Image: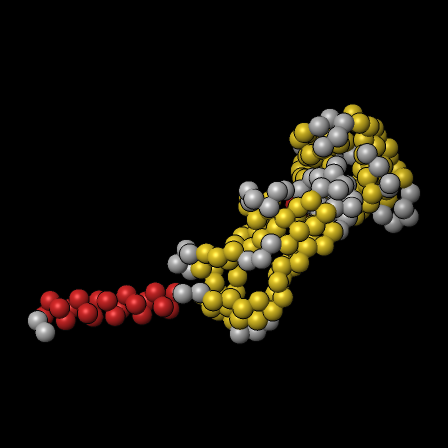
Length: 232
């Protein structure tokens, strides 16, 4: 064997060894399952073994043919223990809409494979979704962003968290699409409140902490809706 052939053999061995180390394998402890929640569709699955697995891409379809990406979760790369995964699809939809989901498991080398398809027919409508809240001019004024599938009258009740009393009420004209709401809480004392939005027989709640005017804006904290109720 000449020197050139020997080098070629060594390189071939190294390449085979390298790619064999990157080859991924996933054993599922439980396949993808989809259940319905007030805020959206809940996807859950679990693995019992992962080898060189980079991440999971959640794909969604309305016809079980054309799928699009709706989210990504990092994998544990290498694991011989049961690992559980959880993802919530909060996309808007009406009742009786059927959704299909599947996992695209991506390896460290970029190759991927698809898992089994799971489907769900919604019983609850999710016509609107409060997506974001941020400061406007001062810590007393906010901009709230929402998406809606329907047009109509949106009611807002602001509740004092301590005694559950309604301290302020407003009504907005909601239209289909993505919009912003200007909210002025200047007249309210610093403290914890709940913003309760109602539209199309649905209710969504956002918890918010209004900072004192002597504090910095960083003392204000908000979180996305923790409660979605259909009143049909």
